[in-house]
Length: 303
Image (tube, rainbow, N blue to C red; front, side, top):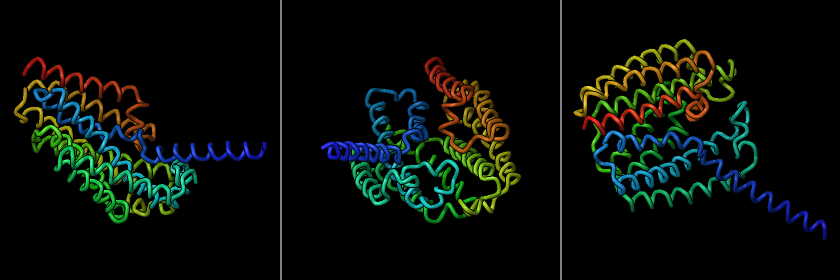
């Protein structure tokens, strides 16, 4: 009798652990990356209405679910290497919390639902979700092993997010905005690779082969180029975007934010997870909040 109750309790705990693991596979903490979908709404202040806000929120959730399916596939493919990583070994599949087959079946069902809902909402948005998923599948199997292209693929994913946000509310983007998005994304991708090199301390080959093709010096040179290009591009965007010239007052916030991130990369050995940096580093978080408030205030007063 007691054994039966114990077995039932153990079964319930096991089921709860699996459900919790499946949710963790979606990496909800990394959904902050998909907030880029709101950039179109932020820079199209006159388009802010109840329906555009609702569309963007729903689009954000659907894109996050598609991204979650990508994370599931990544964790499935990398499960053996993740077990050798100092932090990734605790992910649900690598740690054994979720069976690999269960994870793949869950991901397939979620992908069908997410893509179907995206197409119903906006066919072009649905296409972008498919492109994003296929790009990341290519990354998981091929592109992440190709030096330089691995970081450019990560950046392309952010650009697709920005375009998707514009598609949801039917507004075009200026080329300068997309260039800024691409460069800033490269900046984050380079920081991620540098953090991986530092964290693994020379044992790069046992985790991700492409890291053997990088060095701290090379990545620092990349970051110098991309940081400079990003600041110049954003400055040009504020002056040539056919919006109010007063956007130039946000340039110091962009410069400070990038310099602060570089400080965290070089002096604190952070940068592996931009989403963690956003919430754990108060200066970065305050800068982002001030930036958003500043843009909204400038558009509200000068347009």
